Amino acid sequence: MSSPGRARVLVVTDRTAATPELLEAIRRRVAHGPIHARVLVPNPAPAEWHPRHPERHDKVDEARRVLEAALPPVEEAVGGAVGGYVSIRHDPMDAIEETLHDEPFDELIIATTPRHIEGWLHVDLPHRASHLGLPVTSASPDGPVGETLPRRAQPAERVSRGRRMLNKVPEVTLFFWVIKIMCTTVGETAADYLNDNLGFGLTNTTYFTGALLAVLLLVQFRLRRYVPAVYWAVVVVISVFGTLITDNMTDGYNIPLTTSTPIFAVILAVVFGVWYAVERTLSIHTIFTTRREAFYWLAILFTFALGTAAGDLSAEKFNLGYGPSILIFGGLIAAVTAAYFLLGLNAVLAFWLAYILTRPLGASIGDFMSQNNPKYGGLGLGTTGTSYIFLGCILALVMYLSVTRRDVTEVTSAPVSEAAA
Picture 1 (cartoon, helix red, strand yellow):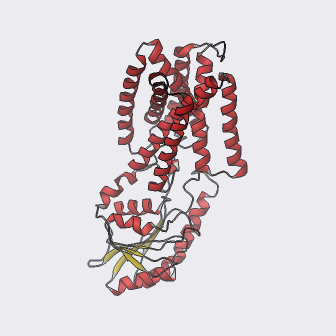
Picture 2 (spheres, helix red, strand yellow):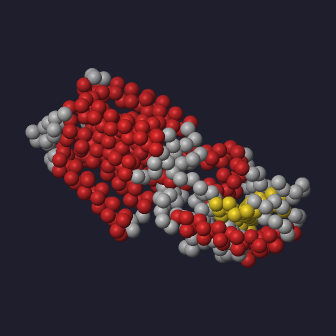
């Protein structure tokens, strides 16, 4: 609890901690009246690191040690006890908004590190934070202490409500990739099953699948954490819908695959570009806001549409056949995996490349198992049998994960002290 009459100031800093600029900003603020301060350090581990990355806890421990060393000079500048902690959030804006949800503050003092020294605390953070409706003081090592007036006053509870969620997607384990590939296979065969075997027709199948997807997404967005059954149900249906988008363009509008494939590639690139421009990260370890989840599912939809077009293009238009297409896309995924583990390929880039490639791989597997074409090959199990086989496997694995929770993101916090001024 803060003392009556004292302004509540949240001090956000990184590993440079108590810099001269930060201490000067605090002293200037105290000169205008006593304050109650709390120091917040965003999680220094890169967002793209897996929660079980061997250096993840080392980074957090390092930040806690720096914070412990920084608190005494900050307390001296404030003129009283100061609490502080390392946030579980990597993006400093996420950390600020979540803190404002738990505890009200009147002002922000932000000590930023230049982008070329530390990438995880962005140089434009004071301007981003000014949208919260609080006065912001910037204490950058590259310049004098400056103030940014609030741009748009919004209640902290409304701004940060989405950021109170746990990560809404599963951890990237072997189970994730196995289920993902089977979902893409079902997307290929189930679309054909509804369209041809049940006689829905392409248009009615699209309407039915789109309505079902809308209902499932509504349920998914209302959840505050990852629920395996709901999440994977959305993936299965969105895989079918993504397939139908490509099928409609090919069969309904006679758009060749050589045209639709680059179109979907450009659309997906635009989605990723806007996502990164708005959120500054494409990591799936940080899907705990409604806006990020919307970007995530939009990207997923177009990975399925792109994968379907690319898979059909390689198997049929290039006359490679289903079997060789499986080998090609499987080999590309293996190359991405090797580049990640052996050559240090960026984890976020590696994930999305593999995610895109699993769609044509799954489509080729689905066609190989269901079709029996003299030209392209196949086992001839039919779309019904293939769909039921993979749906049964998906159901079994999802039930296993629901019980064991082996794919749930680990969430930990790292408080240092909870003193009150």
